Image 1 (tube, rainbow, N blue to C red):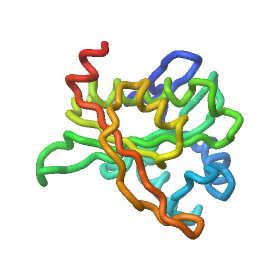
Image 2: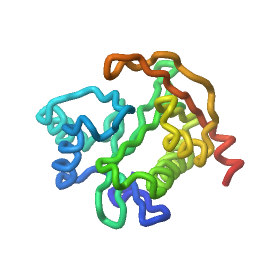
Image 3: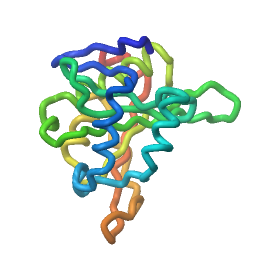
Image 4: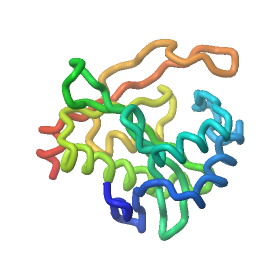
Length: 184
């Protein structure tokens, strides 16, 4: 991905993290209320995350995190985790994920625009075969975003996450490269 990133509709772009993005990103990770009932983050120290940023800019071989930017303002993160299967082959599958740093940026189409940019990049430039994504079963806005980007519902992973003293089901989605090409 070029340093300038990918540019889409609604003034949305997806780009690598810059040093100046880190304070708002770290602050969002400290907010336990940010993701509401859909939160299942694994907490890491700021020092550990800063070290990761210094080493690879959050663009590692096992995990890539990018900024969702709207008209020059960093509003969230989107990323993917490549699957190396079978072992030794170039990745042909990846999981994607998205999160906003301020609830006021939700519901404006930014998530759909950013997801579509990432999907287009992963299929069009990196030649992935299959992308997967998931969300809590009752997260209707996230499910609509995935469906608007062409993802197909594949099923429910029952009691996949334990959060706030109960188990949560997870809705699983996937999009294949030929399905993506047919939509273009």
